[in-house]
Image (cartoon, rainbow, N blue to C red; front, side, top):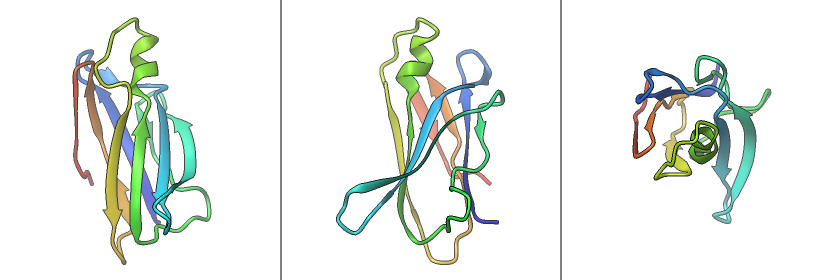
Length: 114
């Protein structure tokens, strides 16, 4: 199964970042971005499948956009980064990307998970 997934962890509170808005976009030949899906993380901070049903994980440049500002605003926390964008490239033959986000109000880190 081809998929793009994420898991968002709030490292300050030591818990999943639930209900955080996430968008997946793909860069098209003109350099513009095409929205593939828009969703919110579940109660475990996960978005287990961001590719729309029937979509293929074709080679190209993708980006995940995390609306961290609205997540922290609901907690009355001022955050330095209102949006986190993670851009990555899929090569021919790749079938799965898991991109976790470790989040705090003043920083974040990400990596390619399994």
